[in-house]
Length: 228
Image (cartoon, rainbow, N blue to C red; front, top):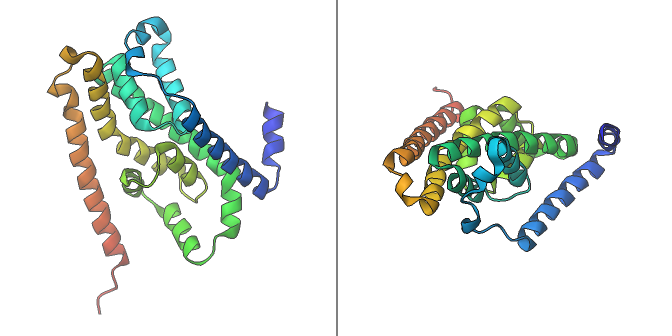
C-alpha cells in the first residue's frame, strides 16, 4: 500500500489531477445509483454496534462525507441513532476527519497541477485562499457553493493552510450539526428532545452571523484605498 502510494505521488501532476477528477466523478455516480438507508433503519443501530458505536459513527461518517454523501444526511442519521447532543458531537468529529482527508487528497493529487497553471485573476484568487483566516473559511463553508466533501477537495488544490481550514470547517459545521442532529433525534424519539437540545444550533447561527459580519468588514477595510 505504501509503495503504491509513493508510485502514485511520483506520477506527473496532470495524471494525479486526472485521477482526482475520476475519483470525484465515481463518487458522484455512486450517489446516483446507491440508495441511502431509510430513517426506519436507524433506531437500535447504536445498540448493535456496542462499544464501537462512537468509532463507527465518526469514521464511517467521515468516509461517507469524503464520498460526497451530503452532510445533512450524515448529521440527521447521527441524531436519529445517538440522540441530539451525542449525535451532534459525532457528526462534528466526522466532519473534522472528513475535512482533513479531503484536504489531504486534494493537496496530494491536485495542488501541483493547479499551482503550475494558475495565472492572472486565478493566481490572485489562489493567493487569497493562501492568506485566508479561520473567518474566511467559515464564510466559504456557509455559502451554498458545493457540498462539504467537494469543498474539502477543492481547498486542498489551493494554497490554503491546513489549520485555519480545519478550524473554520468545524466552526462552520457546528450550528447545523446541532440543528440537524436534534431533528434526527426528534424523528425517531420525539419525546426525548426538547428545546435545550436545539439551543446550541440557534446560538451557533447567531455566532456564525457575527463572525461573517466581522470578516466582511475586515476585508472591506483591508481593500479600502488609503486616506489622502
